[in-house]
Length: 360
Image 1: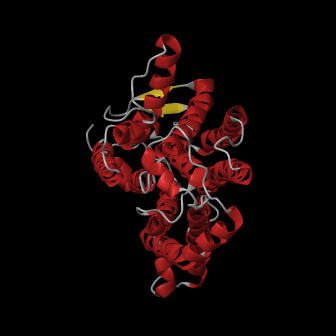
Image 2: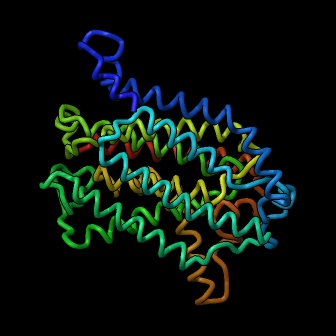
């Protein structure tokens, strides 16, 4: 919205600053951060009053989780509020990729909100049916993937870019949209599975968002794309503004989610943020790099898949409990120990993901 102030600029005054993505990215970050600090405590108090017993705790979970009874959920509303306000304020609203990613974020956020509401209103760990959640998620992802393919440059439409290999593209044809749908829905549910400990999911999400934001900025500038030998996708640079808003809102939320958490993000936040990461990856043609940058989420999801399949086949478990962060809890690791070590892993994977920009 503020970008339109450039219409008052003669090219050498203050309003000219709003032409620069980097300036607006900083504005989005601080706007979202301040939003989180301002509305965090009032939102938590409101959630406490309306939810009563708070987030339902699984009866078969680690014993330490029973101390968290009464902690409110749906804290993802705070992140989404900060993200939407900062993006609408600082991003160019004539950019299709901004609307695609925003639509995915809010769509998955709505699914998560319905799931959280069902859980707290009935005080059960069973919310919206998994089939319904997946079905709605695939509809949203399908529409977003189709839109992204429509706005991609003709030479990149329905193409899958491979990291490291220079100028290598795989033409997926009609399979591009289904593939992209899996990327977005998979990312949303992988982050959702990771959100099981205080602060565990939000920091890796912010790290991944920052990494994808840098990638979006690079592939959205023709000079950077040529220097790095990556595929130029005009317009994706504006997603750097979106990513900054996500990081600012995430930090504002983490202030209250740090152990011991005063609020959980719930499915409202985890599904929305995971969907956002997937949508950015699809928009920037870095779907495979997302699997590297978000490797922690991939491992968390795989641990659940392996556990379920192996148990159905043998009646035994590979892990003491899935997702894998609960396995380490069962082995006696302290919660902050798990969280911080997973943060470190996420940072390492993000650096590896960034390295793919230059290694060709």
